[in-house]
Length: 160
Image (tube, rainbow, N blue to C red; front, side, top):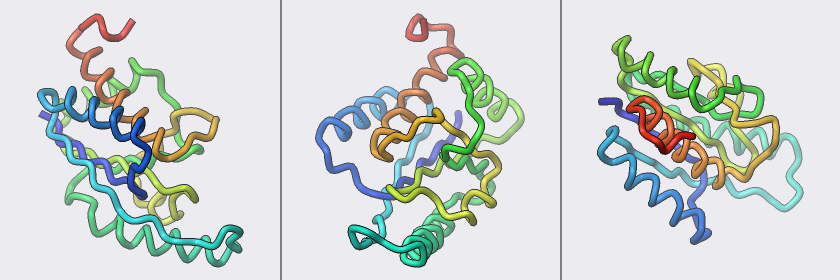
């Protein structure tokens, strides 16, 4: 069984995102060991400068690095990452499982993204789209795609 940790910068405040995330976490319960850890997002002024943004991302990165499980395959969620369709993502999870890489750690940055050190530390950079999504929606989308990937692997009708 895969052990999946999702490290998220920022807390889900909107009820619709929290409800959707909770539903997919519930559905994933029998399929994998899942942990979602929320980290506080750095506070920035309404129009931060580059230095302020860089300092905030560095501070978030330091907190993220401390929480990455030992031996985990690290996947940074970022727009410049590789794009996969759902079937290929399912195959990636299957490949991890059969090759003994049973611990995966997905990292979702806050509203300013991820520090370059996290992207360098990642074994893989994954993009959901060239479009930009709110990081809270990205969490829900990742949870849904994880659920879909497991359903594809078991041959269920969830994936059409």
